[in-house]
Length: 239
Image 1 (cartoon, rainbow, N blue to C red):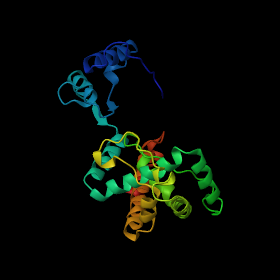
Image 2: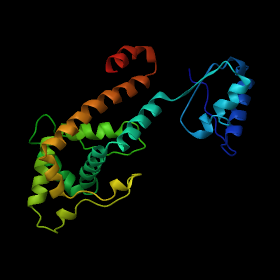
Image 3: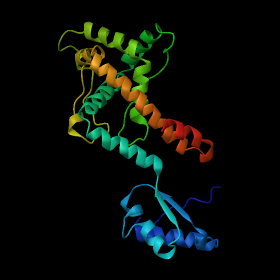
Image 4: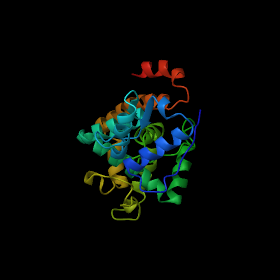
């Protein structure tokens, strides 16, 4: 049951948020009946001493508090990737492939033409990866896996149609797409991407990450269902 959404007109400090929540629920005689609080991971919400959860616990010691499971799962995946050196190479590959198509309508059209030669993948787009979006890494890798053959053919053509230093060799823009790590600076050019598409170790790792991240994304989606009990069996099976 949706209760309400409230705009905070003042400073969004833990003190002001707590005061607003208390006032809102007291107006409906519900403050003492609060028994659970789910929030994101911002320090203003879950700060051990002065966060909203800590302040409410002082007045309602019986309540349970929880940092959003899906948010925590996404943070676990992102933080784990930072400690696996090879995952940085995978992320750079994803961004490079997406960048070529994102910034050129002509190349998107050329890639769509190649896709038409493959009946089982025609029309599927290549998704981007943004660190702050929960499921984007897994979705981006999966979109590449589903289009692995047309992508390989497309980049081979891009490499062959342009001499060293030509326009296609410079097709990958050096842009800021939300990366928070220096290892992601710069993007691979078509000749570099062709080398990755023909590297067995790289492709095997890409497929492995697709299998793992699709399972994790499935867990996350199940925890986002409207009635979690309907997804419990699937969550347990995925784990």
